Amino acid sequence: MAGEMAGGTAGTMAGTPGNGRAAGLAPVPGGAVPAASPASPAVLVVEDSRQDGSALTEALSGAGFAVAWATSAAAALQLSRERRFAAITLDLLLPDRSGLELLADIRASGHNRETPVLVITVLGHPLPLEAYAVTDVLTKPVRGPAVLAALLHNGVAAPLARAAGPRPVIMVVDDEVQARLLIGSALESAGYEVAP
Image 1 (spheres, rainbow, N blue to C red):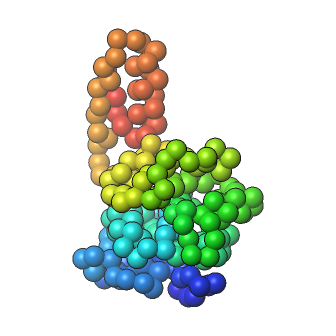
Image 2: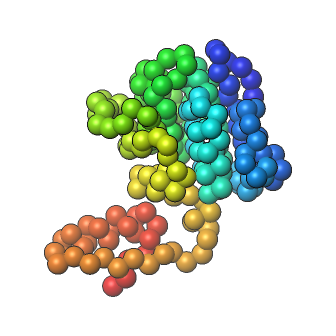
């Protein structure tokens, strides 16, 4: 689905090798993306910057996510009403309206009322985001590993990380038993194995 909607573009990355196009805007660097399975969790990237959108799309598709990229609030709202996403990355400064206004609409109804949202912005933090149920805030320029770590921290594991074989083992060292148990539980729910 690629088309102009209210001054923005929306589209999906098919995830097939050689496709290399996201939202009809620009080739993904390298020209090819890993094949995303139809069952791969999808991430909605809401970003009007070609450079930032390409970087986010490349990092997410490289980790095995299916990616839909919208360059305007109108396009993002349409995509969010069409399907449930595993996560949404949201730029606050969009050409047609505020990212927070968009998020309020997404939270009001539809498939993504409880979807984890990572705000990615040049505005910095702290921002008054409590009312919007934002799960994390990253400051631009953001790197792929930071986005993947934030998603994992919020319970959205990358498909290729899940399929990569044995879980990474982490040893939790803390002199308080309760702290060790709490940290260990969080790590296990994020896909890590905790050493005894």
